[in-house]
Image (cartoon, rainbow, N blue to C red; front, side):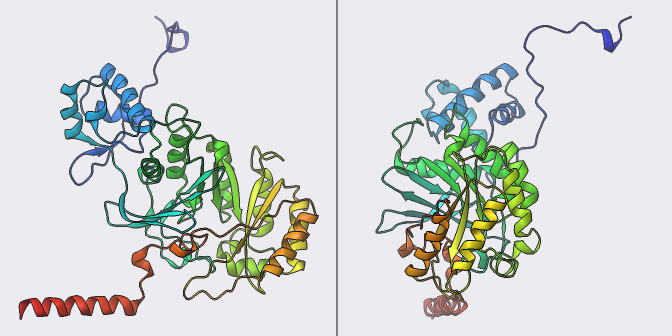
Length: 405
C-alpha cells in the first residue's frame, strides 16, 4: 500500500484550487465586478453556478473588457454570446464612482467630488502637464492623521475605500479622457500618485490590491515606475509596501526636528524622524535612478529657516538616502493657522539643499481656484460651516412651512 510520502507526482500543470470567498452584493443584489482580480472574477462566476471551464474562459473575457477596454455594459462584450448577456446583467454590475461635481481649474486641473453607494464623499484630481498627466487618488474617506497644515486632516476618518473605489477613480479618469482601450503610449493619464484623501498605508490591503490591477500588463498596464505612494510615516507598513507593491515612495516629512514635526504631523510622536528615515533607507529598490521623494510644505517662521535646510541635508546624508525634496508652498484654507513662506525664503531654502547636491524643486501650486491644490482636498459637504448648514436648514424649513400654508 502506498503512503502519501511515496505517491507518484502527476505531471503537467495543475491549476491552484481557488479558495471560496464571500462576495458582498450591492443593495440591488448584484455583485460588482470592478476591483476583482482575475482569480476573483472566476470565483464570482463559479459562485453563481457557472460551470468551472466556462467560468475560467468568461473570467478572462470579462477581465479584458473591464480593465483593457473600459466596458461598463455586458452588451458591449462582443466575444461573449448575446444569450449570456442577460444572465450576467441579472447577477453582476461593473460600476463607476458616482460623480457629484466635476470642476476644471483655469490651469487645466480637474477635480471630481465622488460619492459612494453608502453616501460617503471623496475627491480625486487630475493634473495635466506638457509631458505627463498625473491622477491624484484618494485611499480613505477623511483621514485619521490630523496633520495641522492639511485641510483633509481636519476631517474625521469615516472609512477605508475599497479596491473598487480606488481603481474606480482611475477608470473614471480614463472615461473622462477618452483613453480606452488601454494602451501604453499616447495617453494623457501617465502617472498616479496616492496622495489624495487619507493615509494609504492605513488601508494597505485595499490599496495594494487596487494598484496590482492598475499595474497588470493585460489590463490598465501602468508601470510601477509611474506610480508613487505617499505616506506620512507609517513605519511598520513601509517594508510591506516595498515588498508587496514596489511602487515609488514619497514621504510627507515637513520638518526636521521632533518638536516641529510632532506639531505638523502628529504621527511623529509614534514613529519619529530617525525611525522613519531608517525605514526609507531600508525601502527596497531605491537608487539614484529611483529616489525617494520627501514632501516638505513651506510654512512661514515654522520650518523654513536656513538652519532647517542644513539639518535636512544632514539627515539625508546620514542615512545615505537617494532623495528628491519637493518644496510645497503652503496652500491656505479657511481657518488655517499657518502662512506660506515668502518666495525669498523658499528660494534660500531650496538653494541650500540644491547646493548639497540634492534636488529640491519648488512645486508650482495647481488648481488652487477649485481647492484642488496639495493639502486642500476636503469634500464639499464638509466645507460648509455650521452657520451655513443652519441657514440652509432654516431656509428649507421656511420653504416647507410656506408650501403647507
